[in-house]
Image (tube, rainbow, N blue to C red; front, side):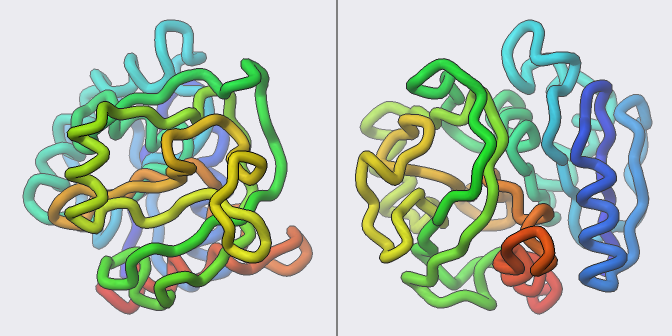
Length: 228
C-alpha cells in the first residue's frame, strides 16, 4: 500500500510518519508539499503533527486553506482514507471533514507524555485489528487538544459509532484523572460518518518500536493495511 504525507510549514512529525509507515510498517510513502495542487495515487493520506503556520491564528486554521487541502477534501469525500494526527486532527476540524473544535488544554500548558486510550469500535479501517475495549499506550504532545462539540453533535458521534478512542487509565477507566487535556467525555479520536476519516490527538507513529516505550501504534497501521 502507499501513503501520502502532507507537509505544511511548521509540520514536525512528517519525518516520524514517513519513517514509521515505510521503515517499520513496510509500506510505500511519499511526501506531499502543501502548495501542490494534485494528489497522486494513494491508499491513505496522513496529515501529520506539528505547528502548521506556527498555530499563530488558531491551530490548523491556516493550513486548512493550503492548496493541497482542496485535493485532500475531495479525496476524503470520495471515500479515501485520511488520518489526521494531532495538528492534523486540528486541520481536519478546520476543514469541516470532522465535527467539533479544539480548545486549549484545561491547564493551559503544553503536554507531552504517554497516555492510555481505550478502543470503542473495531469496525473501521483504523481499528479492525483491535477489539472493543482494547487499551493502547500512545504519547501525546499538544497545547490545543481539548476536544469540544455541542450536545447534539456529541450524541450523533456516539450514536453513529464515531468516537473511536477515549482517554483512560491503565485499567480502561475513563476518569477525569485520566483525561490529560479536558477533552469532552475523554474523547481522544473521532471519525466521520463514512468511517474513512480519522482525527486522533495521540501520536501512533511515535509508538511503533519498543525502544520508544510502546509498539501499540502498530495496531492502528496494521488495521489500515488490513483494510487496504
